[in-house]
Length: 301
Image (cartoon, rainbow, N blue to C red; front, side):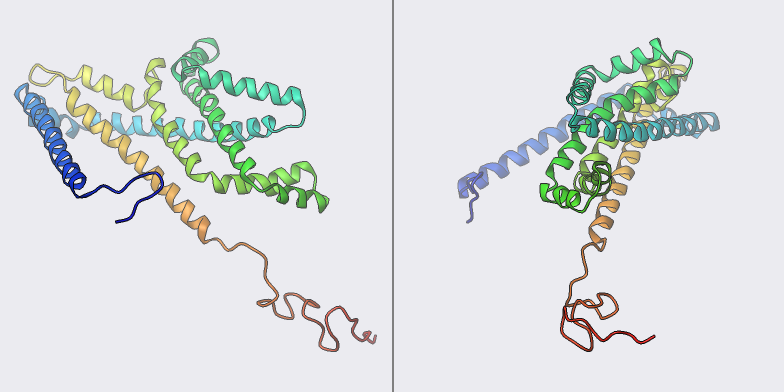
């Protein structure tokens, strides 16, 4: 029986006790789910008529339009947050103190303000007639601040010797940041960046506060304007829209996993002398007429 530094392996009695707790807890959860299903069924929320509304072409079209609107604002917010994150991360690492202080203040302020307030303030103050752009701007500002901290942590994780070597080769600060530090930071922090993009996708549901016709707003309109058997189909609508949200987030997570695996398989590094042929590294292993470093015969013209 092995034990780690942070956790002592349980003994035989503890193993039995943990299994009993797991079985009792699972049964309790199943009982709660069963009671909830029975209550919903007694009130008629699980009747076939409640689910039949999604066979209507009009409701399907409304949901399809809502999915498109959600993906559209997510695309804008994703691009905006990544661009803003890169700018803020570079500014916070700047050698100029006013730039660094300004970037730090911007990040701390908008990370502290609730996202719902930011979206509503942008909509009321600047983009009253453009709810899509107001939602995208609010999401970009908040998530851009989070992405900036993620990228800053990734840049700081790159060994300092790489930046010093790039400067020794005569590269400018912009070239070092764009060609050496940021690519490695993005590769190292890619899972966290994608996780924040998933949060951005889910946060598009806050568009209901400014009446943007995304999925949540459309679900509210469908459930409140459609009456079946004297009741409103809130349960079936929430189940369908929630499933769509879960599917979109899973697809985005799968894309992130694929990108990460592809990045791991990417061929990087420098060709070593043992694998380099005469045409790949001329003179590295010596010339045909002399040892390495010794000049060969002059060519005759």
